[in-house]
Length: 178
Length: 109
Image (tube, rainbow over all chains, first blue to last red; front, side, top):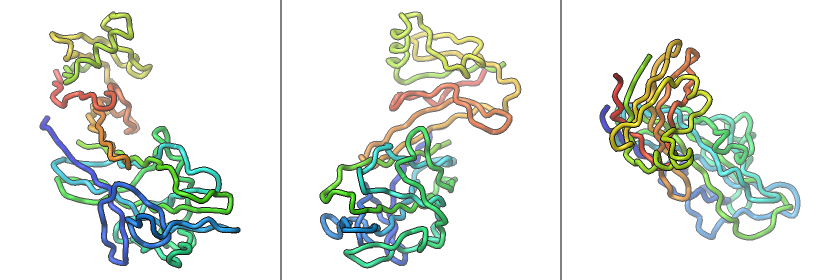
């Protein structure tokens, strides 16, 4: 067998286009942007639920390889604590069916199941871990630089949450290469 | 019956297995592995192992390079040698630990 090597990068889609940007952290916020810094933080409501703008994340494969398939995503199984949930859309979305995140900037996003045409239901993202991974559709061949389907993530915050910056949690992508 | 030689780039992993088993030079095998494995032999500098397995009823031998990337910026690879059963389900035979490499130059004999 020949030595083979594919490399992966995580891409976040933003804007109507969209523009896919390589990211090293998924930063939930209340604006359609990939790197909000300390701006557009998701507020803690007095009552009800605030939604972050949803995140569209894909795995892009490049390099030298024959095939890439069996793409999975999972978390460290932790969570952000009381009043904070991260949901993942049950469907993974092909690039052509991307839907831009919307809402009221600085206040709240719109909920993804009701507003993203490709998402019929969602699941607590932290129920996916190394022993229970989520499948992502898509496969690549012939050394091309291609993106997988993308997952849609959204943070939900209720009044039970405490204000302040959160400790990082870990998302892992996994794929098989032949 | 199928025999192949797998060469490990990192012999320490095998030595660790040996130590864990009282230096019997036996690797711990999973139940599925035990069902299929007929014999194995440590070769020369113990970075190569000769395997003989019974694959009757199974579809084909598979080799996987499984890559990982996380939001901590960590990347690693596991190497998996296994087979598919009649339903197409992948059954692992050998799975290396994180960052321990099973080379892709194993030989079917």
